[in-house]
Figure 1 (cartoon, rainbow, N blue to C red):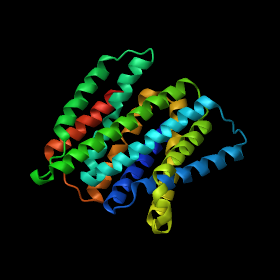
Figure 2 (figure 1 turned 90 degrees about the vertical axis):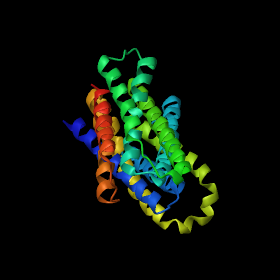
Figure 3 (figure 1 turned 180 degrees about the vertical axis):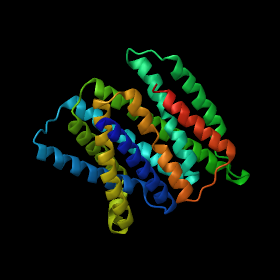
Figure 4 (figure 1 turned 60 degrees about the vertical axis):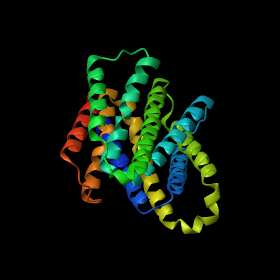
Length: 281
């Protein structure tokens, strides 16, 4: 039962974080700096916890795998924040949740698994939902619309690839602590390179620091629960629970950001959620 609670906790943490990214986008906060601060905070939290436990070990392959996850996840979060600037959070988060299609298809190709009929049905449903759900801006905002679609696709691709590599790490039985340390450490170094020009203005990023600390704590809890749930529970149940973090964003966007959805968009969101669940049955 602990793995179920962990998966649910992961969905809530990821959903709250994505809602904070939307708020930060509306406040025009630096996307890279928010990611940078949260990655460094998470890195030091995990590193300290691992040292306290006294089982700190490093191996080359898990380090490289974790660092790759960290870089891809950072890129996915940055593109997600860019998409939040251009379009509604409720639709954006639901489209990005479609990354489960990448996980299903890649798993069938990279691992000795076949795609069952339910997964093919879910893929068709998700593609149909993507056609229905799309945000339609005013005719004068076509450039913004194209940028929104591009950011959504890049975020979907990055986060979907993270899911595939996370699945690979569970097959290889990599240490949870080692994966998290290398993930946040690799992502933090990568983001430090991207944000090197903004270090001179560090004192002006007080809000980004506060949001980064909060997101870092939630992310640390979320990914720790994520790996524990994958290790102890059936992935067929764990993945759909985590993928439904978009519901948290949907609720937040309707209550906090006062977004309004059209009926066909609500139908598209419902179809997407059904498709996400079917991919893991």
